[in-house]
Every structure is written in C-alpha cells, then in structure tokens.
Amino acid sequence: MISEELNALRRKPSIVYWLDDKLYLNITNQCPNNCYFCLRKYRNGINNFILKLPYEPSSKEVIRELQNYINRKIWKELVFCGFGEPTARLDCLLEVANWAKKFSWIPIRLNTNGQAYLLNPNREVISELNKAGISRVSVSLNAHNNETYKQICKPKFESAYEQVLEFIRKAKQLMDVEITAVQLPELNIKEMEKLAEKLGVKFRLRQYIPCFY
Image 1 (cartoon, rainbow, N blue to C red):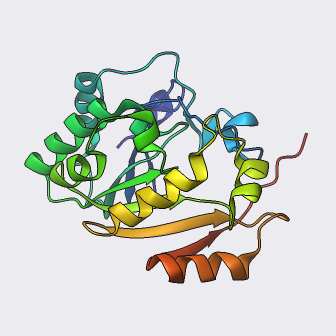
Image 2: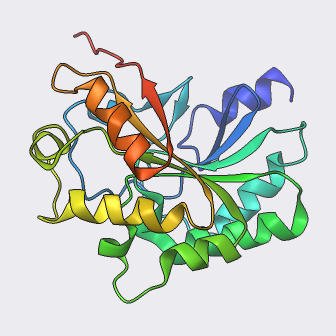
C-alpha cells in the first residue's frame, strides 16, 4: 500500500485495521462493561488507526472494507476486535465471518468479553459462531472472582461473571479458547492461573497500558 493511501485511511474511523500480520475488524463500539482500564476511555484508537466509530457499519459495509485489504498480504489471522464487544452485533459478526470463511483461508478469531448469551438471549451463540468459521476465542475475563470482576469491569449485567464462565465452558467444546487478564493491582495472577486450569483453557496475561495526561 502506498503511503498516501495509508495516511488517508488513518485520518478516518477504521472498520478494518491491522497490527503486524493480523487483520482486525472493528464492527461496533457497544459494550456492556465499563472497565476502568479500557483504552477507549483515553484514546481514539491504536497504532494511528481511529477506532471510535460515528455509526454502526452494516455487514455489507464491513465486507466491502474487508475486500479492500484481505488480499494485500498473507495475514496470520482475521480477528473480530475493536473498541466494543463484537457479539453485541452478532448477526453482523456472523455474516462477515461466513463471507471470510467462504472467500479466504485465514483463521478467524473472536476477542470477546464472553457476555454473548446475555446480549443475545435465546440464541445458540457458540454453535452459530462455530458454524460461521470462528476457530479461536479469546475471552477477556480480567478477574479471578465475581467481586473483583465487578470492581474492574463494572458490568451492566448483574450475573455477568457467572455467564462469562459458562460461555467459556461451552466455547471450549467446539473451539480453541484462552482467557486473558490485564495485569492490574486487583488481579491475583496465581488465582487466575488456577481458574484457567479448572476451566481447562489457556491463560494469557496482558500488560496494562497506563494513560498519562
């Protein structure tokens, strides 16, 4: 991509962006959590890409943007991850994932807070995600118990933590699942490791990005 085109892209909100060899999809800014560490509280985006969206793009618009970049290089992964919770727009996510599965060989990953069943009641979310071609799920759990989860993530839903654990249990039956947590003072890393072992999934610790004013 020529530098002029890249600079033009980075001057407007991005539905599609990339970091190294991974291509990302920013399909919504909706989220039922209000995590105190969330980057979107302090910045408009990352890596010079603007991720705060002025509106929710349609699935057709997401696919159209994706078509512009999916063949630009050999991407290691296509990741649903932006400044919001992708499963808040489950139908859009599924339509785009189905398109990507049909027209590319890139593995598809979902980064999620794990509250998909709360956001989409009466849906077989895990089965639908699996059928759409999503093979890996990274769940931002961020806490070793319910009390700490409420302190860090400030969820809209009262039963959020229990529902996230249930999402993980269901997802691991069909997909490769990891849980992640940001390294914060409230987090007990040893307990997170024990929880991951109990759930039968991998654990990855993420570094906290402090924001200075």
